[in-house]
Image 1 (tube, rainbow, N blue to C red):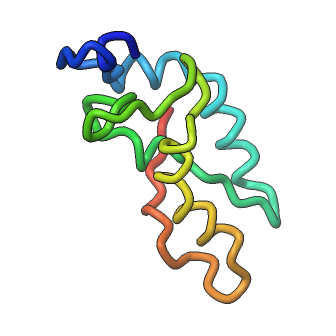
Image 2: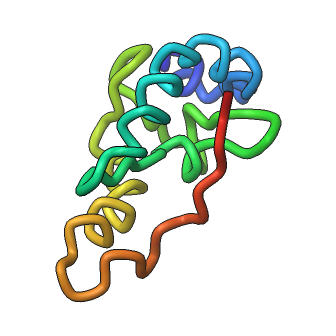
Length: 102
């Protein structure tokens, strides 16, 4: 954050492999939950990460308020995912395709 405030450009993204390792236990639990009837699991990282990096800043604007929690801008990026998931009329519309992660 201080880097951005000083106008310095620096890659603050997180390597995807590091993210995946940190979240391995979470992905394991989500995979089990996904098999339950009536449970829909959302994977917000599909909107924040590609196969190499996870964004922490987009267009010079921070997406997190600390090391684990999205700020308003970060949450806005996920609003379409949540809107689609909560929509009764078309629950699959706008959801990214599921990708399994070990």
